[in-house]
Length: 324
Image 1 (cartoon, helix red, strand yellow):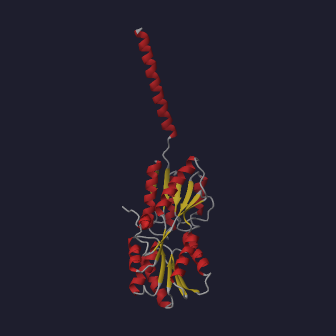
Image 2 (image 1 turned 180 degrees about the vertical axis):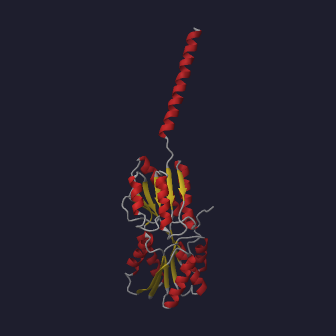
Image 3 (image 1 turned 90 degrees about the vertical axis):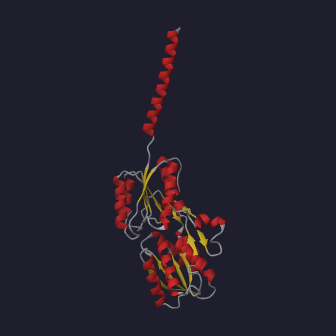
């Protein structure tokens, strides 16, 4: 009788051990923590810090390992390509990239895809067609929105100066294209001058001041990213002509919000970089696990901010994103 009880206990313990062992084996073999290399244009701007916040939130939720490293400036595609090579050599499962140049990284991204690495672009895409998804603002439509906002501020003749950033960056190209398509529908509109600067607020300010000095009839200016927007705002402040020139600009940080309050910028087209970062990780995991199909393009929303709606409660998550 005692022998039977001991035998039953032994069998029970053996069964438990087998279950634990099988469970351990399954976990050790089936659970792989994905590594996703996120490569922004650069990591210092308010925009890309908010992208990083979205990436970190999703990485925690989906239990993936991420790195977040960009070039020193938004023109340095050589360094960005070095970071792509590093991700390939590190056997990343996925690469998320905001491309500095729409063409210069295509060959490396094609190599990554051939090696089985998922490639997702955010914010600014590439011409290479092998990426799994692009996530970002509908840049052509946001350019049209900027045009409509500028038109709404002036019933008479609009003499416009355009301040854009890196001319080979896809979102810069698309925003200007959408703006021109929409604004040129009106007969009383002239594009007086157009300049492209590096993504540096000081240089954008100098270019804007020179453009206005060379073309004193300009009564409206549009700028298409965070740094050109700041540069235009600085120039309007220095020239003290906020009552003479309408300004529509892109992206938000503490300084550009202050420019809205002071009237140096009239409208900001505010994007959702947190969503871009979060969704890029979510989509990469979906594609890696083949759980759900993902669309080729996923657009994030934008908000038009002015002095009237700046502090409305429902706009706070856009206008004043949390930053560490």
